[in-house]
Length: 201
Image 1 (spheres, rainbow, N blue to C red):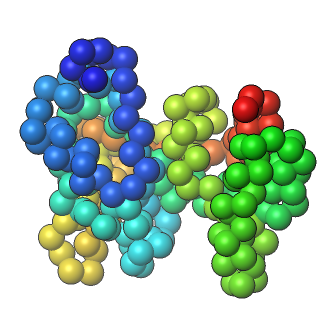
Image 2 (image 1 turned 180 degrees about the vertical axis):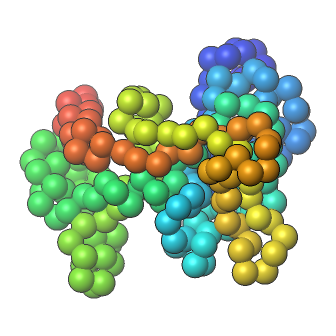
Image 3 (image 1 turned 180 degrees about the horizontal axis):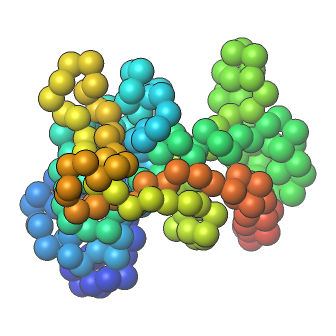
């Protein structure tokens, strides 16, 4: 557990932050004992995918996200700004499948629907959301980040779930989030392919 292993455990939530918010509300000392939180969610400078301004994971429970963003732990937001830059095309997936192990076969099978969905929109490839957060934990140098004060709108109607970085420091509040703003997608996709291709059954 986090309390038994202070400074050693990284949390990587890949969905709405309900459980993480409940955990830190129940035991606030988690915030000072966790190594860091690296979440997949948010949209800092790009359009949302659940509303014009909000990313789906944050919008599904913005109240929980607000708690998590203000819990006081080291927090990195791997949002749509970077996850949409890394795209796995059909050709990429075919190369991945060529490794012919159970992991690459599994990934190929479960992403077919996702690829078909984007193909129906006239797009060859799918953005890589959740795996981007895992990649950050493995190799943070893949990403460019900015440490800024970031809030979550959990009250207004039209901006519900929007992540709002204070890029210019106009609110004069202490930075609380490392916001991923860019990614070396070529290196990331290479890392993904190598790790899965070399995985042992």
